[in-house]
Length: 326
Image 1 (cartoon, rainbow, N blue to C red):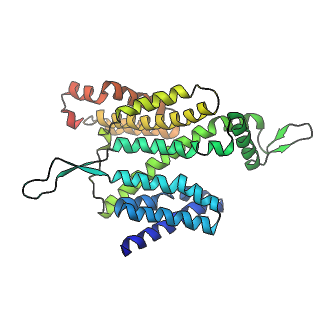
Image 2 (cartoon, rainbow, N blue to C red):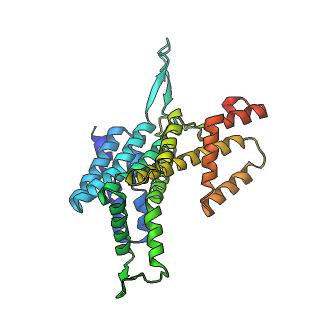
Image 3 (cartoon, rainbow, N blue to C red):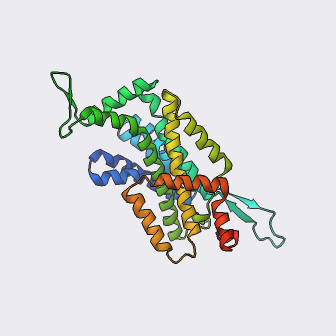
């Protein structure tokens, strides 16, 4: 118990320092800020959920006492709670069948990788959605508050004729309109990717240390539960609703599209197994994603098609490959 407490305290201190480093304003501090959940994830996955919970609480309380109570809330909602929950789910398992007669433990069914990806998207969207009412209880007041924040950040100034001026920007109004329109969705997109990356990296670190108790999942074979299609359908339909409800629905729609994009990449990894040109194909795919970004929508569509039509299974049967090898 003492060891768990000490590990939790150490991980919490590391996480708090990573989170607070953004105050320095350096480029490196931004990277450190985005991996603030990593110590909590590593502790939860590699040691225990209790150690991870202690780490999250120590980091949140430490930031609240040392800096400001608002940091406690921001860390808990944006980093601590999501990291602990993802780590808890990653190590969740249930026995499949009764124990063997010779006392051998039953085979365990671990929490599926596809559901973890969905949770990353949901938590990425929630982290943005809970901030929306803080800025405004309707879309107009939210956009006005967000615009004012960007004006302060960009040091915008209003001239004698009422026009807006931002140093180095030819059309400040157009820039602010663009930021206000797309920043909530962009924040949900980034939050989803950060959760996925930190969970994957934490799993790799724990696996390399020999402390990972679950087998590493076959990511190309991951699947989404049937409810995922209903979630993204509701979110996409809700994004056309005017007002704040439509904005929140758009935030969830973007995050879920990213999740389906990851599923689409899993499909590509799966159907190219055994293909001689696989390294070239995957290299081109990831180069396009890194350099362009928008092709993720194509992979989101591939993920949706696979969910509806079992694309991987069809390709495997066409190639004469058993389903468990697709």
